[in-house]
Length: 317
Image (cartoon, rainbow, N blue to C red; front, side, top):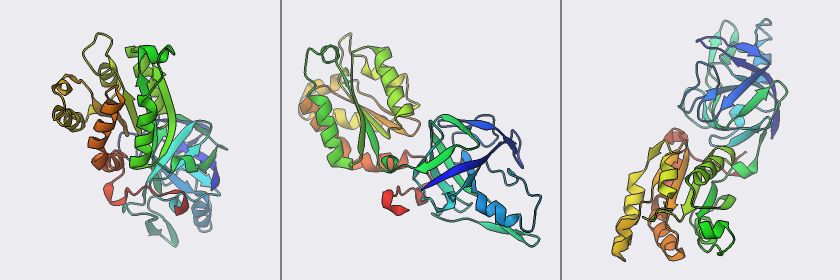
């Protein structure tokens, strides 16, 4: 399923938008400089060229941007792309379909009659999950690798990063996540106990690799080099304290040392970030605590209204 961007439009005020050569999409925000950009789920408006061409049969002077759309798409009708699916667009950007029409229902487009012409009251809306530039002629395509939960794993260890110790926790995290939620492992990294390095890798996995979930293992204790929670706090937008508290509470039933964990759980945009301890045994125990809520947490974190937030698989059309 592929299409081409026929026109890109933007405006800093309400009403029709003006055609431009290119627009800049910013993750978690929308179109730079556009009045409808923001942290909500309706950041970018999409409309199929075929709808505009139909309207031009009775309104030949109808221009692009007349209905407030940011992009006009040829050969792919966004209204036929299931809510929750992600689209690659241009060289870098990724969009996620969040709403069709004003009524938040899958495959729903609302129309209104203006004179003798039936036209869309609103098109399809999407949010930006990876930044990039979009211009006239950019390709837009459904990518099956984005139709499943995407996760990344970071092992934090000075010795592991130096190649002096085999990573036992990282592979276990990946194995347990695949069993618990399925999905696609898009990255597995080992970094030193360095706050800047950890923060940089977290941002990379969230913003560039479009991970829905990033799990770290190691560096959550009281040693001077244990800075994983500090690095995490520096990049998340808000904490999810209940998840970290649940892991500590469960750990206390096995060892009083669990109260020394400084692990943090939180969100960067729609990405969940979870800190786990460094030992394989602790990793297994802590993920067992989170498993009952993990799938629901990932769904609600999408930012898509929940009456239409069912992520479709690649077979959904």
